[in-house]
Length: 409
Image (tube, rainbow, N blue to C red; front, side):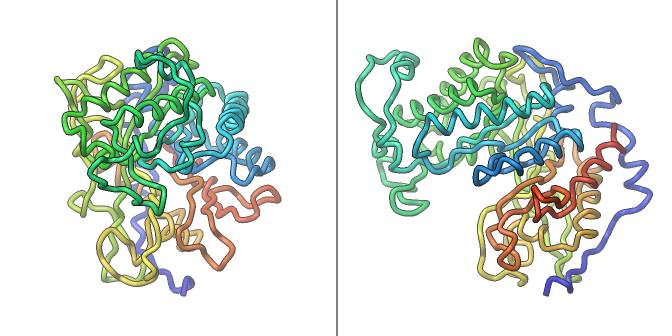
């Protein structure tokens, strides 16, 4: 079936020359320096060199880690999205964060400018019942220290909404509940200590049903940012969420930038052909709100990343089933099934389309994403790496990413 993949290509001299000539900042000189605050130019410089690398240390594979770091340096990546994420509560939290710190240190040894992003998503599970609350968490929230563990039940919506959403004992937490915010701050602080300078908070809407005025979420962000100002590598942590518009309170944006899926749309005219549309279903393009950003500069519309998202399997891969599915697959599972040539060409198409059709959007190139629909019982992950002994299942996109970025200095 996969040999039959056909994709309409919009690639040619238009994208290789005119579309890639100038950066969104209209300044060919890139700047990656910041401390305490980040300028609009520097932030856009980072977002324009962003990759989505879902968990940098997979299966404790040291050789693959070394190859990934090599790839980052080769292509010129400066923002490593989702390099470390917490979905399920780690069995050994201390080991988890010591490993995360070691990985960040290795990346920064190669390129100290790189921003490593962590992910704190919209999930909590019963594993938190085994995690002791440090005294410094209580102190941060002006609470008397207690000798106790986290309480999973105290993080859930009291009306039972979203309870067991991800299966028995795994739910969407309520950010308005104090226990939830203690746990979020705990992990954010440890990530900052480990050298991570960006945190993605997942789908903000679902954890904020009990916080419609965003009072509790903003309080959490302010505490995290205050800690980062005194303790982060460059005294700053960038905070973003999966959201189309973002939230603005009193004229100030709550987040530094936003992230959202590409929302690739299938076409009924060609098998497996897909394209981007500004008027598509559930898209972010030019919808982010503006205001005074956390770093003190104003913008009409907040910068954002668009990514090849993964969210699951429909069970109907290869079929036109509508909705947000692309021929029955999620975005990365669809993309991984294209031929090597068509994957490369579609990256160029998407990069060029975003530059031509959006104001503050940036394509976050995929370098690693999990595949909800594995390919041929071999490919359970999408890897952009050039194949080698260290990454036998690489799918050859790193060279094209490098070429696109080099054509857009």
